[in-house]
Amino acid sequence: MSTKYLLPCSCGDRIAVDAAQAGQRVRCSCGAELEVPTLMGLRKLEPSVATPQGPRRNPIAWGPRQALMLLGAIIVILGASWAAWCLASRPRFVFDRLAPLDALSLWELLKSGVDAPPAQIERWMAASREYGNLWAGVGWAAAAIGALIFAASFAIPGPSRKSRRMPDL
Image (tube, rainbow, N blue to C red; front, side, top):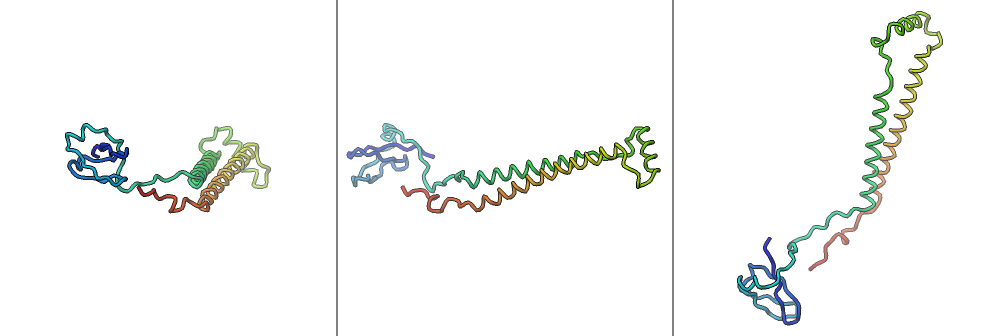
């Protein structure tokens, strides 16, 4: 991007000119025609603050819609992660890792039949699995609520096309 210089007019206005315009004539907003000095003369003028020329892009505005989308996505991710962790960390009954005394008591329990009341370890395992399933359900419910918030964000109207347009200069 080339440097621009401010060419003063007799009306008090200053016109931004580029080095490529050296030696040409420009018209001020007051109607006066001004001659742009040569390159040597341009360097004596005050430099202008560079402004990009051409079509300007308006950055996407952060509004309520985007905030709700982000909130919903975060809740979905956290809820699903929590549910997956609860399901993965539930206790599992692994027979090959039992201590010898526990394996013997389990064998005696299985010999007594199916109608026998559950042993203490079985009650603990069942309660632990139920507890894990309960908290996994809470995680899935939170993920569903997050998905609803995310979907509801699309119901919020976005900025109109007219308000997104940059003013003509």
